[in-house]
Length: 474
Image (cartoon, rainbow, N blue to C red):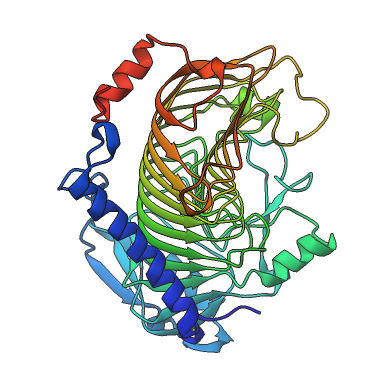
């Protein structure tokens, strides 16, 4: 059963508050005391505010002006689609764009498309709720970098809130809620009755100058936030919630996108917290658009899969990624890099730093044999190239396995840097098992438990530069 925010129990609220408090205490305490071996937390937090201008809108219209009723029962699809059409007309006559105001209330609607130079603004206690009539979700073409739907051959359902080829788009509010009511979709997946790949909650394609902020996202049918083929994207201040058993409800998935900043979000869902992607096998190789220049910081995550993941769809390449100040609780994996034979693509220049793990089964996991293929036409000789990845300044407790780093025999993972990592088992004891390494090589310093021999090479310039850049003084 889907539980509205207003009906969250005191116990649920206490759990969320406790997780946020733990993260705050962690940052403050380590900022005062310092990690061992020289890790520092700066007094002034970095922020992405201003990277994409949040422009003043010349026009403001309310969804009520178009006949919508916020009673939770009236289907307001016509009102939303008419409002977007009117915004296009207003924008064609002047500069500055238009804000669509969603007042407090529960606004039921089918899917709708955004337009350029607009702000979708959800007031406090506003709930934008997706219709559960799956026949009202249009079918669209598969992404060219995937070649087919991610779950099934053929097309895919459109996302609840969608946009393609847009510029200057803001989705924000006073912590208003977007509720995908995904249970009907999850059950179709469980029962094998899906005809097409599920749509997500928010997807923007081929767009630039995008801000998504200060919202609660609930119960997405599929991936929650999916900027794909986008540039200049800021995602901040989101609370993303879905049941732990909800299938494929990834939190935030930048996909073949560049210049992306994700910060100050809380994710508790049924799959990876954040996963960076770039296309699937031969289709992603042909499309050839990497994910690059991405910053992820100050994320609190509790998921059954990975807190932060790279892949497994990596065929366009993934490079120049910084992940810092992350807290991960109760997950299967903390830090994850996953790819496969047939993917191709280059995964390079990625840094994870200042990571806190608690009750995580495997702290760090890199694997070269993860993920399925779109069809039998993938090239088994298209090996991914994985290297220049630094994992620095990690503290973990309740860790069962410190790490598993298994590359590919024909394409070993190279130049992996591990530094200042302290992983413990329950109640301060040692981990249940240490490290599993194969077809991988790299350097390490100040790592407990001691990593495998393949990761104990000294003299890496990449490691040295990572130490310097992230305030590590060996």
